[in-house]
Image (cartoon, rainbow, N blue to C red; front, top):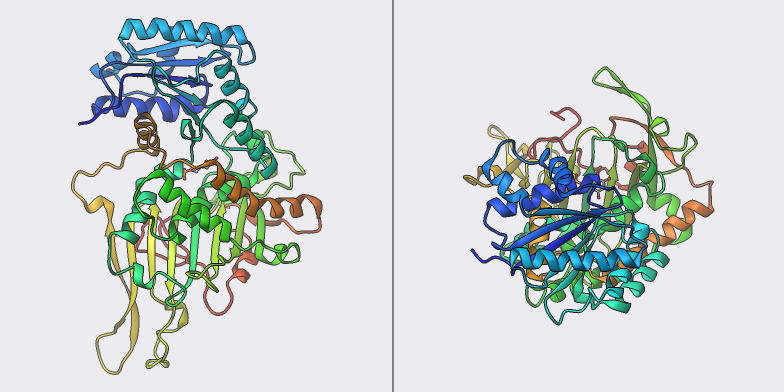
Length: 501
Ligand code: BG6
């Protein structure tokens, strides 16, 4: 199997949770699957003072127990304490990198992973450049930046400007872990590798598109961060809009980073801005309140640790919007996301228009049983098609049936984690599944007026919803007519209010 060139991965913020829970396990999986080169090293850095050995012990907790490869892998891991603001510490970092290169016979290929608080996203790259660690003459120098990329349009622009002072765009990898999900990538394959979908993937046949990204968990100890972010910044501006981009984009000319990201950018540029007076009607925000789930009392958002007891931060967003281009003219897009909803599920529903003439009008088959193609991102990853069938027996009673494909049916398929895929892509220099600077800004352009309205007009309501329910009732009103959101269950092929959650 092809492996990347020898390299050193430097993780900034290595004492944090992401490193232990996601990055190191992902790198370990790449290692045991022989996807890393023979010569590589990982250097963790953070303010915490630790020795190499102490760092190894910390992270080994997140690796398989007493696995032989485990200790071989750990031999490539090092640690260095750093004061992020000190130029001298970057000079020391450079010496350490030289030392590790000599020891492991590695080229000067460096991947810098920024998993620190966001206020360091401009500081660290600038200091690295000060130590000449941005020049690619002797090997690649790439930077991965965790989300959030800015917390407003203005700060995202500022960050882009600051990074581009010392780096080329193709050295900057803005991560959105949703793009690393196998099922999100399969969206492109579903659309562009099948002859049957693309001809009907437009306003003539599609009545609406719905994207749900629900979580059953709450803020899980991240109250301090979340209370300054909220669902719009945490999920909509990035993960959900990226899925909208892949559902709505035109076929790219080729599968490569620029061709795909160019098409996504066009979608974002075509998002119809929501007028200030329409925001209260088209964008519903909610916050979970205390309730009982399966008989157990659950705290409301305002009681969570790190959250202001009078907080107005949204833990739920549902919105309706349009994409003003030829393909999607007039087709409403509905998206919703929230914490403490009944189940963890992310899926895309493509709802087709009803037949032009209703031959079976008087039967049980009515409008909210339109054909739907459901692309399940997680869990029970797969694809479901809902269509009408005659009920056996007298007359023409029509009912809706399911045709479903589940990834789990593929023998021995283990879906790699998003971080495995994304780290490997970056090591190969492939930015297809990373966000480009202009697309991030275009996504912010769409979101920012909504955030501004919310902060400038306190009269715009934030609706409470009991933890464990599908969000405020007001979001049902977004979808006109007899149809409603699909209420997904844990299992792809089930839906309705009563199902396993
Ligand atoms: C993160 C958000 O980016 O995505 C979290 O900060 C959220 O709040 C998470 O829980 C959801 O990711 P996943 O992969 O669990 O759907």
